[in-house]
Image 1 (tube, rainbow, N blue to C red):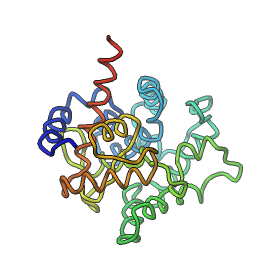
Image 2: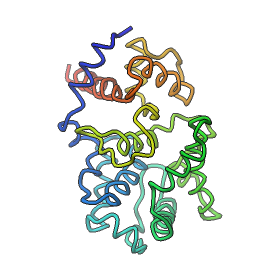
Image 3: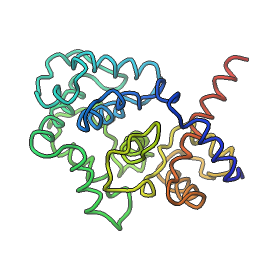
Image 4: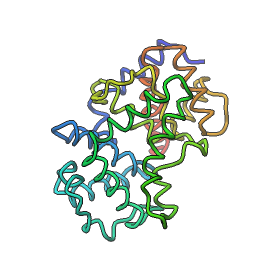
Length: 257
């Protein structure tokens, strides 16, 4: 198994400002104010699957439609110019309702932080997935009666025991304070986070001897997170960079051969 010193060196190598420009985390760094940052991060995380260049292009498209002012766009609630937008499994009739729900959330409360904080504190001491259940249930309860699968694909149900990679990635951005992550939420600590598990992280963690489970599901997320906590209890998810960026670089190098 890889050693702590080796993991620390990899994390230090890849967790720097150079990582930002090619990652969806770039969108939270565009925001000037807290609401801009958290809304940019949440919306970016919804689209962050599939081909990296394609989903970053799609998020840029949304930014342009919002006149590069996501918080005002969401608060104003006029999403007619999202007509025709689509990404992979989701069409405009899947995407626009999410913006409508965000509009209501920000006009009726303090927004995403209040929603996540309430859900986290309410379920403190229970399983982590119960916390994510409450967040996702907020959107499901306000979904159109005829909501299609594309809506639910944007906001996966934790009860299905998937990895919840995008939600865990968003939380990493919001909670950790580093050159990459912005750390503007303090109701939970980096020690409370779970690994954003994707194919790169899963492959590298197995190669490094950190993960034994073969399926990339929520059980694998828990196994890997607890292993990383045994190595760095205060900030286990810093090793996301050691595995993800290293895995991406390896794939690039293989493609060049």
